[in-house]
Image (tube, rainbow, N blue to C red; front, side):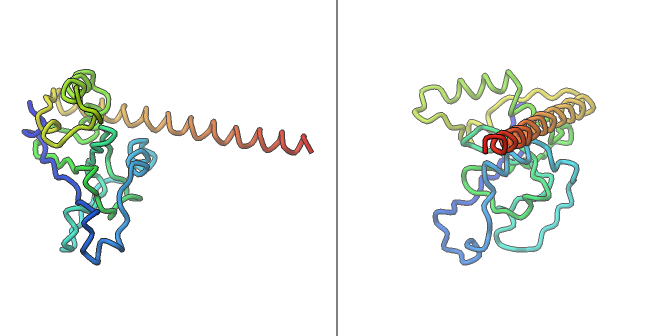
Length: 187
């Protein structure tokens, strides 16, 4: 199944044309935000999609939505901490339209699936700056196992990401601790 048959790809807003006065008060969703969301440290918060009628609302991040970075070719699920940030043109919201597709599995498939990575690599061959385009993204083929299997894979994937992030954070804290002790001993 082509990705465009399962999701609607809504490209973020071009902020370089920021003529709207509202744009200046909004914080842009960044690659660091995506990494935080992908590491799953805040994933325990689930969706409560709330639209307030703002003209920018289609471009605002909403908890539980899948976002995709065209620059890094990575997908993540928006956490509560990143709710309400404006999605710029380097990102797209992937709005799931197919009942048989789980959002965490979609992230796994886009980020880790060998078949999807191979399709992306072939599509970006010859580009000076390898960057996935919305049209290439829509044409990618995605395999959909049963919804139960998707949920199991997606949940395990985010658990793994969370464990990796926690291990990295622990290593950083241990390094700070040991270097602090060594500095004290050095005086």
